[in-house]
Every structure is written in C-alpha cells, then in structure tokens.
View 1 (tube, rainbow, N blue to C red):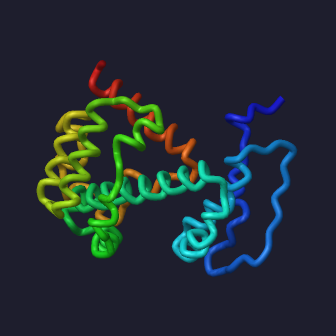
View 2 (cartoon, helix red, strand yellow; view 1 turned 90 degrees about the vertical axis):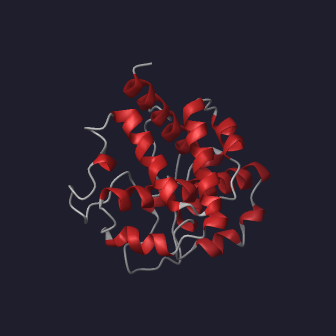
Length: 209
C-alpha cells in the first residue's frame, strides 16, 4: 500500500504550465484526498508571480483554516526568501546579479510584518536559538539595518558550521552566478513544518547538542 506521507504527487507542479505558456483548464485525479491536496494545486499555482493576485482575490472562499495557513505560509516564505537574498549578496561579495535585482524589490516594511512566534508555535518548533535569530532578523528588517542583518546572518552560519565551512566567511570565493540556500519555501504549510524541523535537526547536529 502506498504511504500517503511519502508517496505523494505535487499537483501544483504537475498542473502548472511550462515556461512562456498559460493554462486555461486542467484536471487532476486521485483515489484519496485531504484538504491539503484539495487546495494545494490552486495555492501552488497562485503563489507564482503571474497568478498571485488572482488567488488573493478568491482565497476568502476557502475555509478559514486554509486561509490562515495560506497567509502564514506566504508571509513566512517571503520573510525567509529575503534572508536568502541577503545571504547570496554576502557570499557573492555583492556581485550576484539575481540577488542584487531581488534586493532592489524588497519591501522591508511589508516583509517584516510577521508574527514569528505565532508561526513557530503553529509549526510546533520551539528552538530558542532559531526563534531568536528570526525575531532579531525581523527587528533589523523593520529598521532596514542591512549591515547588522548581514552580520547576524554571518555570525549564525559561523555558529552552526564554524568559520572554515561557513560560506559567508569566504565572500567572493565562490561562483558569483550560483544561488545558495534555496528559493522560496514550498507552498504547503505542512512542508514548511518539515523544512523548519530539518533546520532544527541540522542545528542540533552542527552544534553537537
């Protein structure tokens, strides 16, 4: 029997059109379904740049718990993506063109309008060090204090990996066109839980706790 936790298809990806194409109609079939699978495809497609405004205009039609999860996943994704943009600026010594472009479009006031503790509680993540890092990042984003935010990101990676392994300790030593640390988080809030738990587990391993 298939394991529903492992044997899953990403309908959001399957039903999304190829690059430079638009989709008018699509069908996905399944022998079993849950709320996440039911709205996953529309949320995934809706989180794309081209369709985000369309989904936001109809999200109120979904059940309240789905609306709340969508909101949390969306704002948390953007918040973490900003950290990844700045991380790539550090590693590339401010030469990564994608990071430079993405940085120029950041609305720090909007991105930092996030309740970190509420999201962490929803995810069931109680890592004190991770919470402190995210809350301090939020505070620096609100102040638009980019220099201190860069220092915070660098010090955190050094704490986790050590100076030799931390990429932020060796700016400019990597291909400036490469993108490190991933893109936006996956649209599913359940996947966000797994991502944060993976971060937590990696921290325990790196710190030797």
